[in-house]
Image 1 (cartoon, helix red, strand yellow):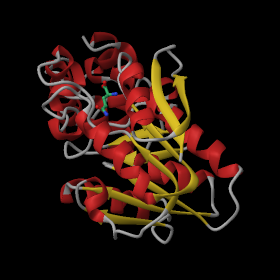
Image 2 (spheres, rainbow, N blue to C red):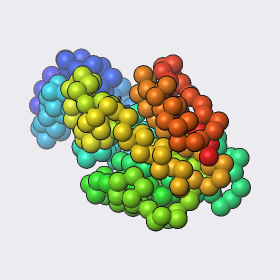
Image 3 (tube, protein in one colour):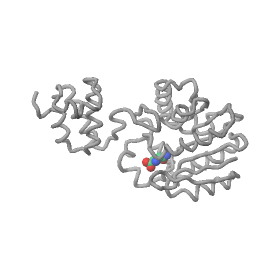
Length: 280
Ligand code: GLN
């Protein structure tokens, strides 16, 4: 074993972005030596053994080939929780935390018992983040993908939220009973239009296309969710949906057409119109 395989040398020689190299190497150190991230600095003369070194090389080359960091380490931080993620689910995005915060704000003003619905839950990110931060709320979360629901259920168990978040399989409201009613409905549906160049760039190339695009104009799932909400919201209930930066007018118009009131738009941290909300 040679010093060229020390933590310090591996990091400085890596062609990866420094922050990504640190995340991946720290994953290897945790797995092989149960070392925390601080070892990257405090034990930087540690020389990796052959198995750890081979894991690092594999992760490094997969990342160089474009595979998302979150899939390589199998987890992603979101809002106040950490989720297990795998190629069967969309990687939770920081901008989606806005949807969680809006739901949490709305929940504060509602009398108990409170029931929230998350449509197209994927990894369970939105539903579980809400459940984690509002411990008096019950949630139903749906997805049409059984693969996604398996990961979401695993996340619920890991976070000990499985008694409060109930998962159901089906497309949008089809997973529910006709008379199921909610105080808040949230969704981050596939809203990228067919043929959008983002689908063939970056992390998106590796994510489930069904979680990203409706294969149409990008608005079809948003329409189904907004129109369907009229039958599943309690009076004064809130619908909150994430959408593309250029879909604000279209989504607000769909909400008006569906008969909602108090229609508002919220910008994400980058200043892009990202979430539209309305009340029944
Ligand atoms: N926000 C994601 C992206 O553009 C898209 C997620 C979605 O379609 N719901 O990377």
